[in-house]
Image (tube, rainbow, N blue to C red; front, side, top):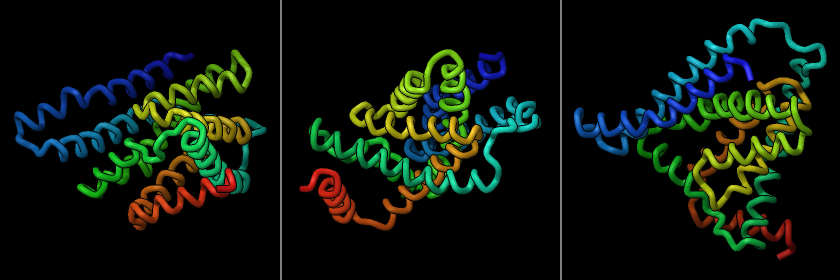
Length: 234
């Protein structure tokens, strides 16, 4: 792993842990509402982190793409296909969790995101734009990419996907996050373009946010029951 990549990972870690210092400061010194303090700092820290990461990657972004990397047309096609693949992998994982492991399909991580988005709509840019870019750079380009040079696809994707799952702090649904991580890794290898898993990740998150806004809890549960019927026949 290059020194540049090490700096990027350190930036991401500092961005994540900064909340433990910044939020109490906003709450107790500046008397900001605790929920709003978490929201505003999350948006600020992710934005600042992304700027730093892109600055560190600037030399790479100025380099010529690999000869076998996907062109514009292929990027668009794979991004569209990838969204369906990601939702399918998520659906399969959730169904396995429900039917075999007996896990409630509701995700605390997703619910927490939606609660923050409803409190302050500006928070939507985090799951829809900021997080997908940062996470794909960290987990696919750097972690998976470094591992893939030393081992086969399955092991590299497994390790990077498990780390991706753990970082979301939703251990009940670790299978769901790992499944999506495999899809993102496959798309990166298939296209040789990190922009493809970024677009798929961002598209998927955006659609989930829109669905959560437009559907009431009863309708969401109904959709989950229909998904269960599709995969297991009732």
